[in-house]
Amino acid sequence: MLIKTASDIRSSEITSKSDYLNRRQLFAAAGGLLLARPGVAAKIENVKKSPLSTTEGVNSVNDATTYNNFYELGTSKADPSRNASRLKVQDWKVKVEGLCNKPATFDLDQLMKMGAMEERIYRMRCVEAWSIVVPWIGYSLSTLLKAVEPNAKAKYVAFETFYDPANMLSSAAGGIEFPYREGLRLDEAMHPLALLTFGMYGETLPNQNGAPVRLIAPWKYGFKGIKSINKIRLVEKEPQSTWKMANASEYGFYSNVNPQVDHPRWTQATERRLGEFSRRKTLMFNGYGDQVASLYTGLDLRKNY
Amino acid sequence: MWWRKALVWALCLTPLAMLLNGYRTNDLTANPIEYLTHETGDWGLRILLLSLAITPLRRLGFPTLIQYRRLLGLFAFFYICLHFAIWAYLDRMLDLNEMWADVMKRRFITAGMVGLVLMVPLAITSTKGWIRRLGKRWQQLHRLVYVSALAGVVHYYWLVKSDIRLPAAYAAVLLVLMGARAWHQYRST
Image (tube, rainbow over all chains, first blue to last red; front, top):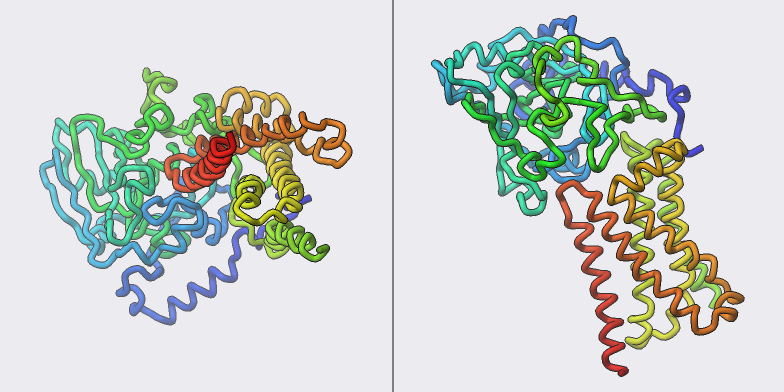
């Protein structure tokens, strides 16, 4: 047989803990020096474990850093890790504006100090019917949103990815509009599961995973988790989102993981967890239904896919 | 000369060897089944287009290339069969209901299936015996390969989410190869 079955794969191969520990020692030895260098993975200190974490097995760092969708860095899965250096993360700023009382532009340091860092081990389900389990680090997006005090008119949150056409793929080549845009309803964005994410596997995010700050909304398809955010805007109307703009019949605004709503290209009833041989059943809201289903009471999820 | 054919064999087997080596060294990406599916499909289509390049090249002054056409056609069929088998066995776990539903529902799979099915009679009748038995009709039958190649390109075009550069490149190659045939037809009538 060509592929190893799940039982053939030892857990030590999946987690590759020794590599992970070696790297931690290296960073510990380097001390604060590395923390000052943007674009280089650095350990994130004082991270608390979160009760929101899954107990499922975590995928290897290699799975999470070499198999990526980040079209600005290339459209194949291997491209983003190869082209990671094209994303310039120096002097990163995130502008939070729109319908709020305290709009502000934050630098990365300010943002990282705004909330208590938590490790959240989440399932991620890609719309392409594969999935992965990753230990993210960050704090609930609600912490940032509360700080800028959305006003009564604000109903949605719009996000934008940093776009640097000189170093990144053109919209024409990628076939989707850049800068990449995504959005959440304000109540979705305020949900504690929605994570403003700065790191993974104990360290700051690698570029291909959306450094230095990204969104993770684990009950939605992965593409909702916008990477390398530099703009957040509180708005009244449903904002545009890149994949919906590209193909509205295939990608909706909500894009909640839903095994009952099929996609023209892929069955959404099952998925392949990276590192596993057999497909597994996809869970409603990616298994986070207990926490988030109440957000969608009365909403027809077949129409609002 | 025997060594030339051996060279073509070796070249055509290289992608397979690389995939087997990737399996041995555990280097088939984080999603090996997807990677194997894409690689075998890609090579099937590339070799099929190469086989379609033989006739125009022959007319351009390389008449001896004809001896490799059947080999290339059969290798294209081989990689496309692997592509199908990986999808059927490793991805769909031989669930015939699900596979049939996929073929009917997902147009990129419909197109791919058409391309593969049309190649089956061509592979079967590729022997000397069948060429002799079918006579003039052999050539007519084997024009089906044009439909197969088109179906393959459309399959790829419908599969990609947004970046159409590669399928567009294959389409351009097919267009040139078909254009060369049309030009030849036009000139000789």
